[in-house]
Image (cartoon, rainbow, N blue to C red; front, side, top):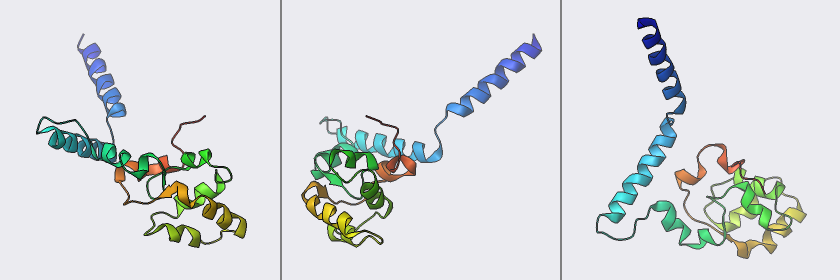
Length: 141
């Protein structure tokens, strides 16, 4: 009986450690939770910093500092090569910096210029740009 109890405890610890969030995930979750609680302290709508960002151009255009490569699939000629180059070289101070990415061909520059109205820029948000999700977010069409 004592051995069975020890085995159950050991399995519980092992499984628990596999499903605990890593430090970066925990920090992002804590940031969103704290912001949500603060925003709702006055009894208003429950919001977080990502909801606030979605209310800006970010929700309607490609934010070159906060998007992932998959967002470029909606625009002809930008996915995956040009979108990958834009994401890889972020962050940018202005949209014009996107045209100065090293190694762009003239055709790529022309395609970016043709789509500049579809781009916007804002400060990078850690919850949107941390890790490899910018390159492969696991969402496939």
